[in-house]
Image (cartoon, rainbow, N blue to C red):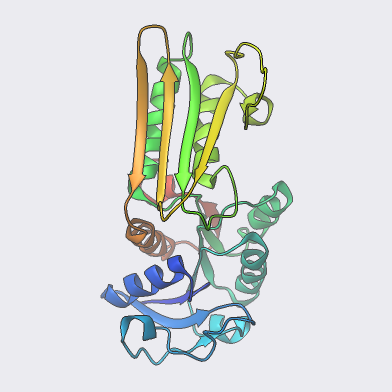
Length: 267
């Protein structure tokens, strides 16, 4: 089976990594490459950055792109992703979504769209990160008493949302394991005289700088010991390969909203 794939944000860092991964996969075919209407890359061959002619020109015409595709992979921004997903529903195209920063209203709309077309959505497509999420569930249940929990994440200077979607997902997993609501117990910044730490909180710290692809550490700090569960990405290739695994998973699905835990058989 050949998976016909359209890539959104095709001139960006992640878009290019996705294009490279699709071109290298024997069971995948790049059929469309989308970008913003104001992108200077419009009209260029999607493989030009690799010195490779694909015959696929970068376009801003969403319906035309989806008319050729069975799947869309999207790692863009929430507003663009929502427009793409609405078009996917109209065209009957399945979607793999790695975009982060969605509002609660947007998440609800995505769930509604997934009643008509199959969608995999995850804040991180890395296989390793999703294994870490399972480890965090186990750790949080075992360390629920006497341990303070802090989540530290670092990304490149260009990332526009904070904390990262992956850090928030880690917080959600830990909070759920502890029987807490992350919205009620998260602390996103400390400054000045903050008083003694509330042991029921989950703290977040954000670092932005350079070309850091993505580092995440969850710290369980107890009396006399610390447990740290860390994942470090050195290349976006891991996100691209995870996305292709998600595409292959969706091949047998007509509709529904799935996560990477479903893709990896850990749900």
